[in-house]
Length: 418
Ligand SMILES: *Cc1c(COP(=O)(O)O)cnc(C)c1O
Image 1: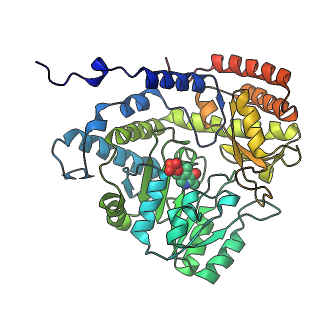
Image 2: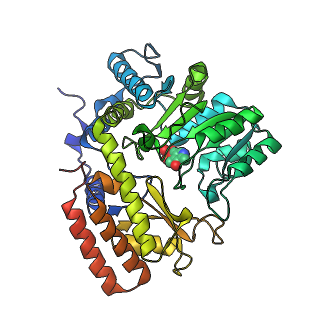
Image 3: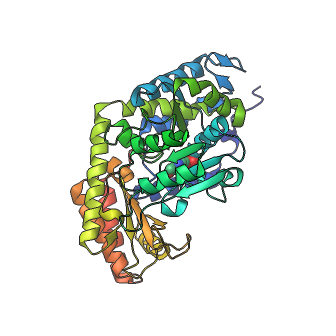
């Protein structure tokens, strides 16, 4: 007698199945311009739904606390080798559950409670884990925030240097969630060296662009580099740490047993696949298209009278200042979602509106480029955005745009489906 029939035989969960189907439909029918999102391919998707999710593998390849780890050891070693090769790094840890956990591990590896850290202010484009008051980083460390210049809206390296000389941080974090220009990691290194600080480069957003060689790499300059794997890198939801050889043991110990338990081996297998994909020549073509699509989207929006922060973009995203259009970021997000175009509200530098309202939106091209959008589709998308933003609340306009979005999406299916 079979004592434990598989759960799906005895009770098929129709409620969640229905929701999963709806989510697939939503993605297929939506133009996703959220800069931190992407559509993964089927190989990555399959690995994430694989039986490796069942396996406990606390520890590292060859030094686990459980038996039965031959296969997970092999896949984790592959992920580590590929990460090192892709980014030319001395050491890689592929276990962080996400980019935030990767950052937390770095704090744990390099700092003591209360140490001084410099990070980009969230209101200027930095990440929660770079010292926001509501985050562990802001609660446990002395944070000196830096930002962009009011006029140029570019990172103000002279001001960063002045702050560093004054406050003598133990760690400086370079990296952002909403900054559309090239980051000068070498300049950050020079500042760090002047005050004896360590440098963490957080490339969560631009990892794929760096991997493709289309943005200068921080690896030669930073002591540690962290990233998320689900953004431009187009992998599973997860994190990754690269570091200098001598910091490897401290970083590994911080991830496990410092702050995580069993690694998500299905996600690590999926990371190995995404890194393999990122090592192929086609990946460079993809990133080139991401960048050219972003440039076109920004310049078309600008051509229609919207103001682009810094006047353009060097990467996969653009920040749009809506204060002259007379609509808040929150309302823009809402009316665009109603027609099937997904963006997120975003503070612009020196934004007078609170963070839940904001004066801007952030748009990005990793996801639409994955589904095959090119220059023509970006131009169409920009004109649809402008149409909706200049007629908020107009049902007739909204209906027409919704129909055009549907047509566009039908021509460009998402890769994980079908
Ligand atoms: C997205 C992001 C992270 C990590 O985010 P997770 O959602 O935890 O993967 C870290 N740093 C920056 C700059 C980011 O943009």
